[in-house]
Each structure stands twice: as structure tokens, then as C-alpha cells.
Length: 86
Image (cartoon, rainbow, N blue to C red; front, side, top):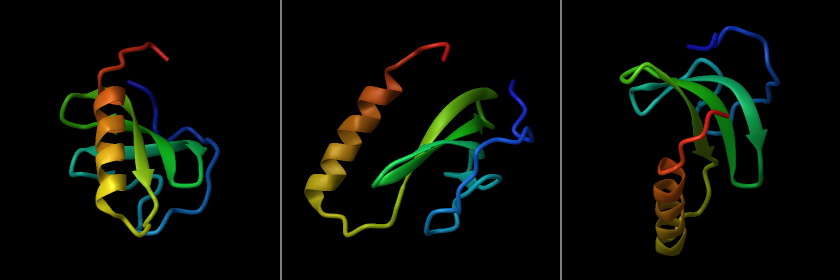
């Protein structure tokens, strides 16, 4: 497994206290920031249950409506189906 303690690009934590070293959903320990956009940040992470490297997309706090929720749920299903070494 990769080393989460290696230095990487960092940005201030997003609202809600998620940032490098945080544990999300009780299983994903966030590592280096991989990228950031208008609605979310993507972190390198370790799935502590399955002991594997993953990427975790953490959405910024926004005014959510049912359309946003449905769109991001579909995105999550599509991304979860990907299996790529990088």
C-alpha cells in the first residue's frame, strides 16, 4: 500500500473538517490532495476495511437539492465501476 505520510500538494481543508489525515465514512483515511474543482476536492486515500488505495471525492457544503443528489449518486455508481491501475 502507498505511504499517506509522503508530502504532497495540500490545500486548506474544505468545510466540514475533511482534510489530510481525516477519516471519512468510518473507513477512508485521506492522504494527499489530488485535485480540486468548484464543487469538490479529490484525495488519495486508504480504504481501511479492504486495505487498498482509493481516491475519495469530498463535496463542498452547498445548497443541495434532489437534482444534485441524483446526479452525484449516478456519478458515484459510474466511478465505482472503474478499475484502473492509475
